[in-house]
Length: 124
Image 1 (cartoon, rainbow, N blue to C red):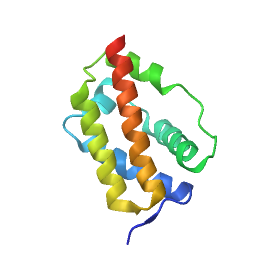
Image 2 (tube, rainbow, N blue to C red; image 1 turned 90 degrees about the vertical axis):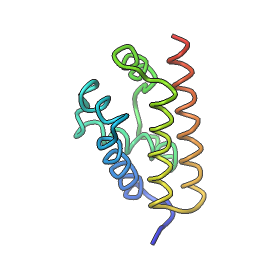
Image 3 (cartoon, rainbow, N blue to C red; image 1 turned 45 degrees about the horizontal axis):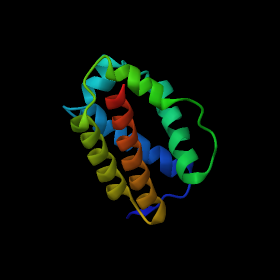
């Protein structure tokens, strides 16, 4: 049964499930594993803090994702194709796991993040 996003455990479930899909995805998986060579033990807790800060007001995230994504975009294509796939997987994950106001907010914020990152990358 779906529940509302209420706490950090919910955020961790969302992030872990989402990145499992990303890593298995033919469009996105290689970007994370082969190009960026993400250290998942480090990356996932950062993503927990990022989304908990946005959705729960935790203020636990420190970092500048825009700079990292711009740098990554110089190593591999990061176009509307990749960002649309990212957003599709994110929305699917939210919809599979959660209901309610915070779930809808997560999808809106993800869309805004994707749109802003794509715009910044295309502007560089």
